[in-house]
Image 1 (spheres, rainbow, N blue to C red):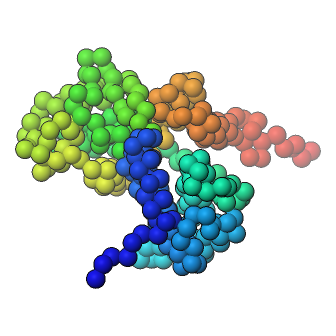
Image 2: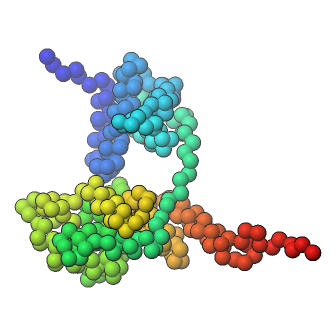
Image 3: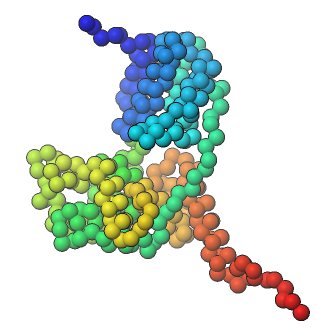
Length: 320
């Protein structure tokens, strides 16, 4: 019994993913997101009897989005969020643009499909005090504690994405200069300064912990697990959540929350938004400007709770 050959639509999605990996140099995480979206898209089209890209029209693309919006995922059958549906449309649009550019199809059926309205969610940074408590939680007397302190200090001190942190090699960190070389989204490299606390934590980890963790699988990876392999994104998320709970923070704290906090605290301290953009590795300043909204809300909160003529009930005329 032979395997069923892939449909023309499935073959073209495979070719498009190769294009993203080889020519555009997208990260594995981003490629995985495209792959998941396009796999769902192909499966939906095949159920409708559409197996060739030329047979896709705008009505079929809209039907796919409507189906995704009405479906659920996971064991708890969670509905797909508007952000997930919008991301799926973005994947489908870029796929069909590629096919039109390559001459596989004569038109782009996704070009006129309206993007779902996505509510603008503001980041929820931690306070400086909460960040300090988390970063002080690891036990410097243990090998894993030294590693975890370095991980957390570098996440917050350089505002790194967790995938950027776990991809670091020892040679990417220059402790003498106080800088880290980071490979960001789209294969874009940037250099980020590293402050004294992060520098000291990484130095202590390199001299007192990493040699004990290193093994035959280690190679150049900076942060290692107890088996000598590269620390994973999931492991970083778990250790951070554990330390946050340990110091009494009752909200879920993710590695990206430390990145949000890095950006917000810089802006609160007077940093220019374009400097923060460069530090975060954002392609557009518009992405960074969402943090200015967070600090504006903070300013309003401080104003209304602190100014004597702005407090609730202030300024009411006294009765004669």
